[in-house]
Length: 148
Image (tube, rainbow, N blue to C red; front, top):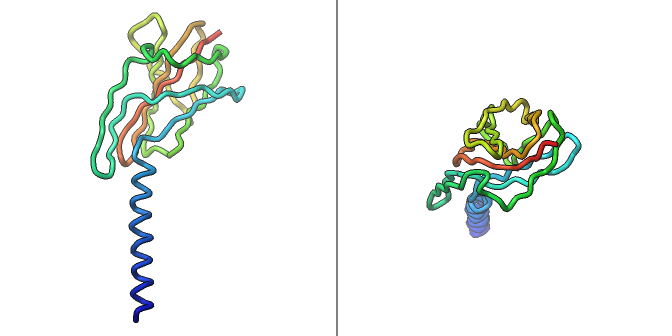
């Protein structure tokens, strides 16, 4: 009888530790990555998000993309394809990304098809913002490209 009680206790501890591990590992929104069709990695920065934690939730608004001046843009060719992916699959990903041209205040909407966007044809520096939804919240991510 003591053996069954010990096995039950061990299984309970494993389940509890698994539950806490899941919540600890998923305490922040997923990260995103972007790369060009020539396989060049584009640094991606966390944008605004709302996320439910184990004991509390958090919403954080980030500054406008071009105020995030700590990321250097990656040079891409006009019309080059850029693949965007997440380290955890979203429940829903926006079918559009917002693209800001450095000298303009209003972004343009660009279609996201199979996780890929096409770089603008016009030369210049652009900020690209993506958005996804997960069971525990939503998040945006930003990266910068220079079309040459």
